[in-house]
Image (cartoon, rainbow, N blue to C red):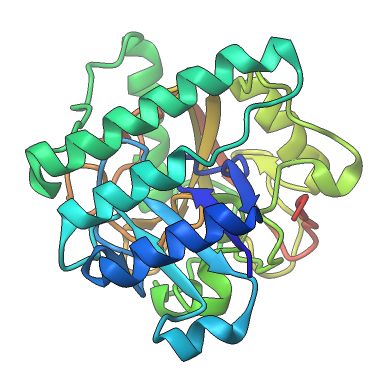
Length: 316
């Protein structure tokens, strides 16, 4: 028996993931899982922390069913009956995270592991309602804020020459068991299920650099066929209005995140392999992606438009 562990932390980039195959480790951890079942959850939890959303275990064998366990469980994400047991299990799993062979990557590995360990403990000590949050900050550039607000006003009043479609908010599709784990914020934004954790530009031979600036993510999106808002898409359908932001995660890694406007007037988004939602990090409905609480995604990259001709894919 073996299983895969995934740390739910990023929204755009693929999450850290590894296989646990050593028989002794597997046996020891399986005993822990069975002893502390109250620390396991079968569905994604309600964790609304800044970036860490728990850990997921995907069992490679159906034999776990005979033990009374589902094929996939979540730990330390807010869905378990006993969060203290979940935190204990999450720390045990974190100890199995393999150290990279590349000496240059070991520093980042240690930073990530330590940051996740602190997030696990903080989620228990402070409770799900009191985990680390980042309050909305005053925009550093008043001109940028004014421009973004004016763009949104014109969009809401249909004063821009670019026509766009606003589909209904349908989280049930994206939160289905077979969809939620393999599709990210970019899939949600362009409304395409690829089951590959789509990356801007990946379908067209482009890889976003680790610096992950607005310009670099935008380059990939434009290669996929998106257009900057104002450069209207041609006639067609699925001309969704989307917004892009970037930021620095708790381990120092750079990441990106997308929002999509819905018919109801609010914006939906899907943080990584977590469930789709229409609320921000303060649990308020997103009516303005620029001014809402975006957590660590503090850098505004602008509005874009998707289209049915857009082609996206990812590495999974």
